[in-house]
Length: 223
Length: 223
DNA sequence: CGCCCGTTTGACAATGCTCAATGTTCGTGG
DNA sequence: CCACGAACATTGAGCATTGTCAAACGGGCG
Image (tube, rainbow over all chains, first blue to last red; front, side, top):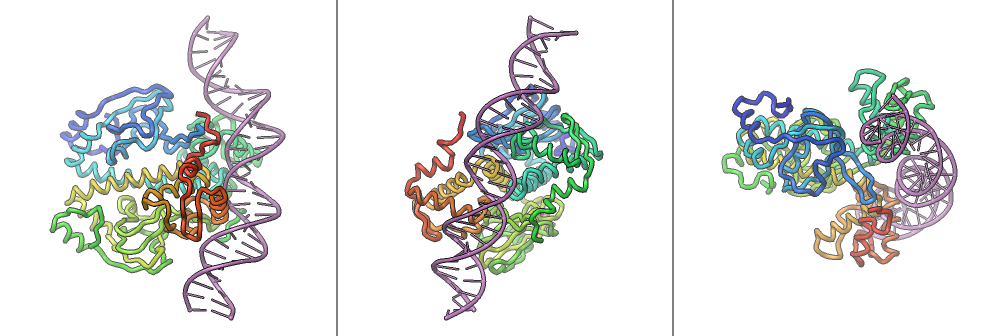
């Protein structure tokens, strides 16, 4: 089994129980895994590939809530709440998933306090991330969000040069905007020689000024 | 002790342990309970009064994440994550709070699988609520959010006439906008004879059209 | 009575979205 | 291997929504 953090260091016996309840499932690129409102009989873990969790407006506009990769879980909320997924999930790439049936998993929780505690920590982290996202959407503007995103990538990768993990359409949706706006903002940053962009390749030329963009310095901060 | 849902039906012994670890604390109207980033040594329950949980921008603009009342808990996230509050909390009224120290509470969890499960459900519900808030902020406009809010109140109260539980400044902050905009939107709804507003008193005259506003019908839904 | 806070209103500015056109990249099938 | 189409990406013009700033009003509390 893949090394889901949630299950690290589990006893042989419990790992065996776990193995006993999961199903493996493949998903092609673009395949829908579940839809918001759909009945939830369990949650998923990612063995390979990447998955986006998102909400859709009537207009068709999407807001991506999460992008998950190997070793991460999604759809867990439905396990502890009466069974409907609160958002939709679609594979971004050819993926291999593990399905954990809710009922069996809940039984297992009773036997493994360890897992339960880690699940609490996981949900707490998700909450913290969501709170940050709400803050971003409500209190910051698109350039600021983009700058923060780029700085985050820079830190994650540890280099000034990196490849965006998302298409610009998807990135726009993740940042709560649309591709046209993203393109323009990126253009402005490039014209200002703060970053260099070529396709998905990004080179951060001036981290200082990028940070100013991220925190909206030189704007209206009446600190 | 107040009837926190989390602790209903607990054994005598466990309730006693619980009583043993909590501290009571008063807070005046407008008093800050904790700030974002502050060290978190535990979480709170509300015995009396109401509390807002919010994020602040550099500009001073606020986004309210939650409004909590008697019987509700807040700050729990900090218990399962390394100890910093992800948002700030301020009393909206004169309040009476119960403080649960994190460490002692975690110990208690080991002895009460019941509480743990309920905590998982609680965090899951918070996540679902946050996901809905992100959806609102990103995919809907202010009139739509306001309409949805009013319809929610209507349903909660069970009447077409009710009193707003928040000042319009706070309501604006909750809806992710500013008082001026809220005032104008409310004016438009009143002029259209969809609602009648007098101070905090709201009378919903035309629920149908209010629902149209909420779901942006007659707008660009290219279904 | 007067001050302060919450609220409303107006004029304005700007952020970001829509629509439309065009160029580019990439994967697939001939 | 190349050609084609679909999705991705960029750019421009225009505009809708909403935030900013300034002012004025009202009610409640000291």
